[in-house]
Length: 309
Image 1: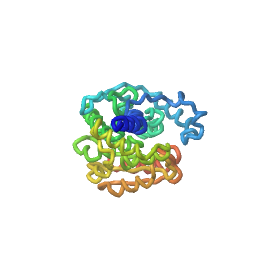
Image 2 (image 1 turned 60 degrees about the vertical axis):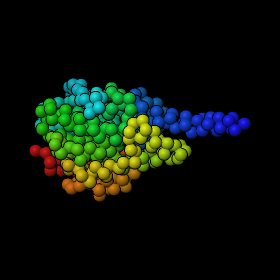
Image 3 (image 1 turned 60 degrees about the horizontal axis):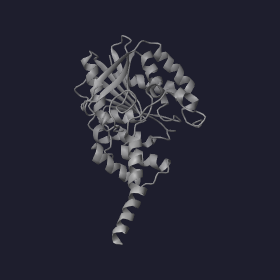
Image 4 (image 1 turned 90 degrees about the horizontal axis):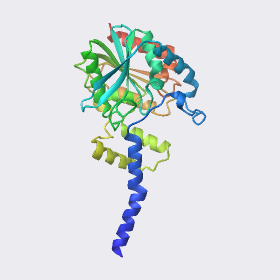
């Protein structure tokens, strides 16, 4: 009798806890097949904050695509092949752009890339590991990607690029922040962290609440990430920022419903000098450059011009 009770309890735990936890883990961390915004069913997502900006994003993307590009790759520290598309306009300065979690690179970054092209930058759109055409089965949601930021900086340096700007949005911003203490020996002149989070764990805590996922699943994800990916989801970006080896600018909108604006302030306060903080009143997640291009653009170029020839 006791045996069957134990078997029943084990089956119940598996059905109601272990199996869902594993499914969530795979859904979150496994390779993402990202798609451009034309392939989204926007009728289903008609209230998404991106919708009012789709026309402008498309125009900026077309501007980017009007220039010739070449596909490039960098090898990560663990051997993963990282994919990128490089627009060499003949400038001395190059911006390496890093997109957000489960985001298609041009949907996420065309506005930023077009702005930088118009202001004297070659632009490399870097695709994160475990996304689209980049290799790797598992994302690190910024924790693994911090080393990929370094790998791309090394790639640029090896290809004769002497002035590098790292620009990341959302998870890409967090990855750049995590990498901020590792770039001192590279040609990176400055970093921009746009809408970056404080830690993976805190972001997942916020996301699970919004998606009505039971809170018990959160420590399960932390344990699974530790066991299978050797990642500490609670590690904050401030651990790296306090030893930042290059100047960092933080950009965040007050209407960001994905990543709290207050986290930008926490990250800024922890960051080593020199640093700057731009809070854009009313801007949604990652779209300050479109919501208020004058304020964001002028502030961004003032920051950049301090550290680039």
